[in-house]
Length: 242
Image: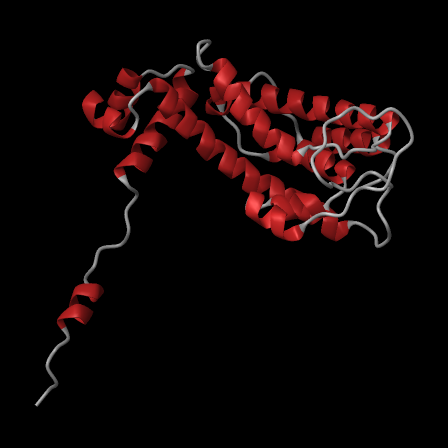
């Protein structure tokens, strides 16, 4: 006689596969609409998602909440890609001590007035608590992180939706500040970094920022050869300290 069936096991076996939540589906639709149209409102987001405006507002009560949620998703994707780019550069780097003042220590954005000093040691536990990828960024030198930013800007999959921080003049300041906090974690320049290196890091960042904006806005797309040339220029600017 066959053993009695286990109702819990049966229920588990026929459980449908996980589907994206309604909130995620709305964000997918809103991001796609923003990328295609360049603007977004609660009405247009609701139409794009195929839901009523009250249904959308159950998850996003205001346009600011909706745009912030889109920016947070984009930033999380960027963070993962940046962490991978930084890790790759660190793994390829030759063995040996990094240039003085180039290792990320405690965040200190005060201007440097002279010769570089040794970067302060990183508290690994504090880095782990501050964010998922903080430890990755802390292991890299400033030149490695800035070069990784340029490499990411040249190969990431971008669209007009990535310019969400500029989508609404009334929200631009708040959204830009949120994005700036993210970038500051990636591109922090350690205290004690020489003035010369700070300026060269800034030049590389401006290359990356311009590349990102042009590609996201559709103004310009770079070929693999052109991206390689930009990387070489950046490495030369940084004096080979990668």
